[in-house]
Length: 90
Image (cartoon, rainbow, N blue to C red; front, side, top):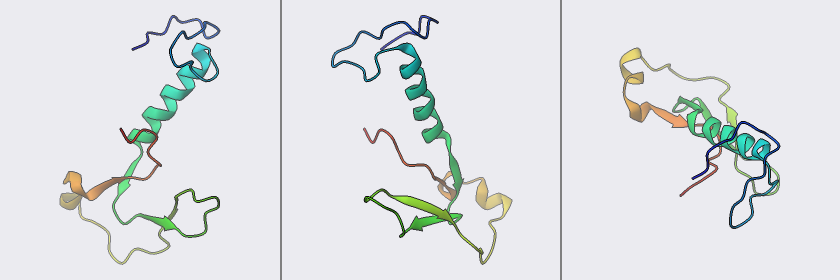
């Protein structure tokens, strides 16, 4: 665990060494992690993109949806999926 000191130039002592080494880099990493975990969309709104480079999984918005989900369907947690690439799979 690591607490922020409020000084973005403060070093981040850790083992193994944290890439970048300052709290500014750690803060950016935390923001990226939170953003990737909180970006959700209704299932079926995005599909996997086959035109990606370097083996990276991509997504694209569906051009036309056959039918939209009702409000009652959207109340079910199973109707939602993450649309960002997961940073930590652990």
